[in-house]
Image (cartoon, rainbow, N blue to C red; front, side, top):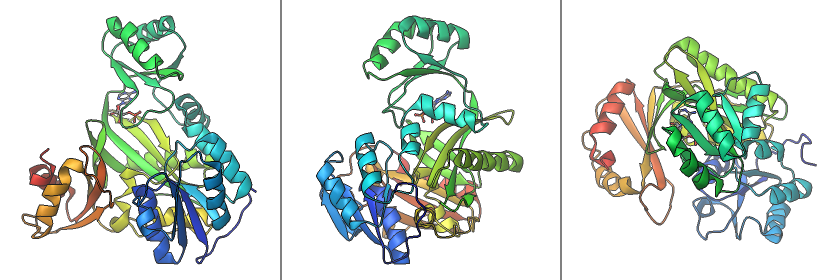
Length: 385
Ligand code: AMP
């Protein structure tokens, strides 16, 4: 019953595999619409568990727990992409999972993902599949240095990657990444000017909409800022949005599909990665768009008409990591120094331990001028570490 088309109306229960912040914000949006939420997550009192109607605490690969989730849900979705293939397969046979498991299967593996993007007629950075150290050396010589060696599975936030800066690094880079026991892929280094992302949504009835492109700034490989409108030519942004729609259409995605891209100085766009779920770079939509990414995902998986995606105000989203929580809380009592014309909307995820680099929340700065909001973030005591 995986890909049948069904409309799930408010009152119905949305089961979410994973209990992190993406699930939490999904539930906060969906509950406002009248849906109920159930979650399966290994941790007690997870960010989603705190706001869900039902919380099943068990390992993701626990088949009995997954069956219990299926039994109480009218529709199932997931909030992270490394869902075990066996669990995804079981859920699709037990419950209505409009997203299916194919898109997960594709996006869980960089090589499969790149081939699917190319099949949609969209460019990725030139790449080679690497099966041995000799192949790696050959490909490094072909692309020149620097170039980027990545594991095909399991990498995130820059983990499972090695930027090869000289041929002499090949043996060590190969040995280190080959330990991951997954295929490897070498990519040409793209001297990008900016990183952009576009989040598209597609519903079972085939309706597709893409949110305005975000310009993303990373620090230590973790998203720091999303800036919207992105500071790039309007034609480039329109092209980026079209590419995301083309990929979602070609892959027959259901729900959200986040598309991360590199933009070069001469206006070329290369897709880097996909994520079939709500995305950190789409948090700006929560107050800045007519429909948030979370409401859109609920609408898409429940087969309701998609909501309008227009930007209501320029916005800068700043991530709050563990080290930013204490100074943020200090600041919140007075909001000292916030420039006129900027409103700060703080979102915190209810995580207990503010470990360094852990995503704890974000602030959407609704602004009349993105530069003003960026200057404030860069000078604020909150983000000095
Ligand atoms: P990823 O895990 O693929 O999202 O990569 C993490 C970060 O590494 C990206 O956000 C880029 O800043 C950088 N990166 C990854 N692949 C490339 C590439 N082919 N060329 C240049 N930079 C890259």
